[in-house]
Length: 334
Image (cartoon, rainbow, N blue to C red; front, side, top):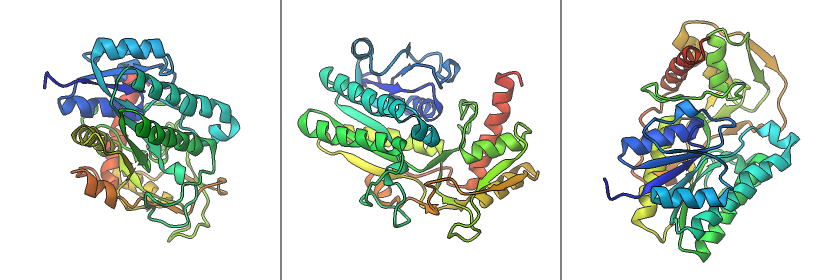
């Protein structure tokens, strides 16, 4: 293990990034983290992981980290992720997600970092005409968040063709849950993820859960989404890294989901089941741009990597999210 280079995780103090740090460590990879701590938490990074507080667009800092830590690969999670905010403040998203990614990619090329893994999103597909969604489904984002991520995918494709670097972009579906061992989880205040909101309601942190739209073309009229456990997602990143190293001429653009969907009401029923409580549901109108159903076709990633999801069970995802929400209350002294 000692001859391995180090992986720099950007946004490693955030939700998905902190799980990737744990997955890398568990797999024996040396890790370093850069995070500006705007939405991340210093305590989410293990004490034995070198930590740099700063901006991924600070090319001098990135060069310093690459040299000090012997960085050979980057996992890029840093960015802004709230879709409605991206509509209200598109320039923030094109700065944070596109311009800063461009700078980080340039730093990777300049400093000889050969492997780059990018946190992309199913939002790059917009409202797809087919579900399950395949990787070659047309990418027509309907908001600046999705477009800012798609722009980075294009940059990576072009840069990998021109320079000695290969990349993997993983297009996430709905990420949920928390580390089964309770080491980290979704900690952002005011989060908009359904399962996070629902477990907050179950613990009395919210009065009710809003259900946006009950007239979709689905079995119960509420939107259907593909929920993936964050630890399974983190494991996919480690496999992506190993695939990039094994074949430096190969790039990967892959969906990351379970290929199975649950409606909003089915998710809330699962939270009721796990907690033995009844969450109050507040039925509201549709939100602009929400597709009826968004489910991944995950056959490509299953074929490409030896990925075997361990937590593809809705009740398990809810159980881990709930346990973390309780622990977070203790951390914050609630």
